[in-house]
Image 1 (cartoon, one colour):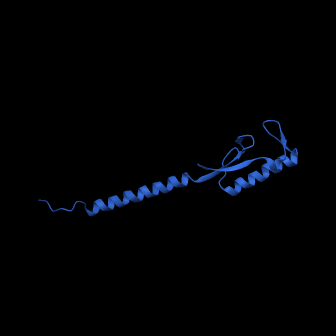
Image 2 (cartoon, rainbow, N blue to C red):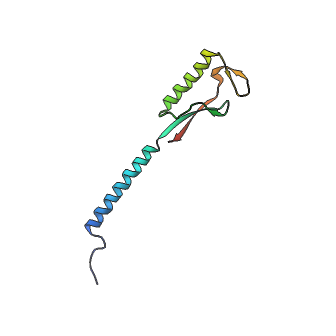
Image 3 (cartoon, one colour):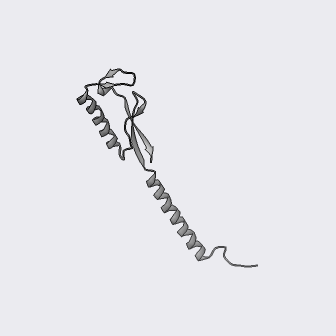
Length: 99
């Protein structure tokens, strides 16, 4: 009967390196899947922004500027059903997305 240990020290070191590589890879993928934010125009059921924002604060700032632009240029927002509403009445929402 052979009395050799089932794993050598080299086997254990190799397993540890593979585990570290897997952890690094997982961290990389988590960073790639970071949460981003899009703004939706729920009044007209369309996206309000063309691309995602890196932070919620950027998305909130976009909403303020979106409403302000309509208020200053037209004084109203015309919905897809041709109703004129005050820009503060536009229903906008922020949605978290994975990039």
